[in-house]
Image 1 (cartoon, rainbow, N blue to C red):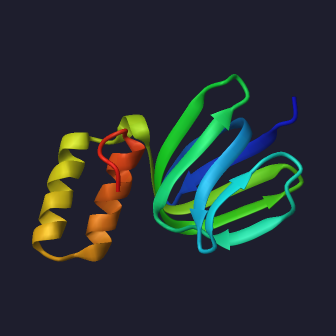
Image 2: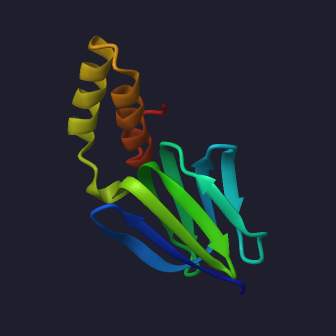
Length: 125
């Protein structure tokens, strides 16, 4: 089975690393799926969930906010300003942040909270 090596790194830590069959991330040109053998890519990451299908059949989901994505030679690097794995997200806190952002008309904070909820399996953005 063909695979690619994935590194998801936030500004403050390595979030996830391993082998995958496909990674889907939101870039400046829209949602992009990267599979082994894909043409080289360098793009800006937009706020959105990143889905990683691991070679053992599992799925890793992370909320990512800003950064860059780079792919070449079956090595994918996701260099994010902020990244959280789905199981690290406090859904109650994200819901409160979403309500606060809506009440303050803060579109950026609202988008961050929505992405966190989507990644954690909460309500859709």
